[in-house]
Length: 399
Image (spheres, one colour):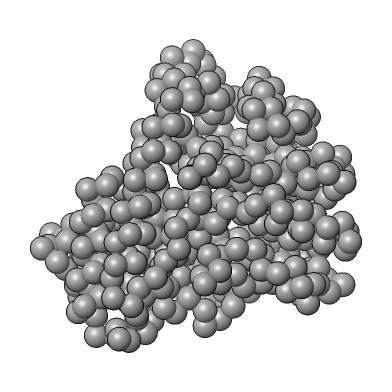
């Protein structure tokens, strides 16, 4: 039998999706599974966006411009102005989800074998995209005791070598919910400028900031215009994960022109996704106000419940809709599988993501899980009760 490629062998399984077979089997046994493993919101996609799809009079689903439909890019210019991010439609490339934007950024900015420093815990698919592009992710570890704040810049300095080409951040953060402050971004700006690195900034959760906290964009950092690549997506903003529309934005003409070659090679982003996304920009503020209030309520249920459980701890996220929780368990991979294979409470169980998959450093995350608080409050209360009972019964508990 022919061998699988080395890249294929290196490609990690998704920590978010790898337990799906066990979830499927639990459902076959008649057990209700609360999905806390994946950031798939249950919030309805904005009505105006859905109506744009229903009412479109497209007769031929043709290729769009490789950079995306011009009217959509122009409308995005107005969207970003709301956040004091000033870009032109010729600095925007519409992508097949934020995933493609990240991959284009890696392939445009980093050579095979070169390195990108990423604070961990990190979005697990960064590792997969890095493998695809032949890039090495170098982790700098943030700690739950510090609320997963940006590690000291001195820790970044220790990791910089002649192979270092970029720093990749995500704010608000998936999987921790941490929101980088303006002061932290300024520190990153200085190290990026000092070592002439790219700063790749994943800002997918821009709208999801809580408790009066405001999002600061890397695009507004002065003095490093040619170093910054903004990565974005409509998936979570408009609860439109399946539309597969993301964005790569850069003022660096060389990076833009290079990314465009990759964009041309894949022809175009999805037509109907762009139709939906363009209309979604007109979504009223009232929609987001309601969504934010809902996520704050959900967050509080999860955080308060976990911190009341014996031996458990999590910080209160300032953004996104994820939390990393430390539990009194021996192995989060075993625990998350056990929840689906061997446990139920009142014929219900929970599906979580082992935090090991969100660390690039081997051995970290063994006593942590990531929870997506994307279910309604009542379901979250039920799922937290399941988790509490499970921790009492789990044979690998450590207290």
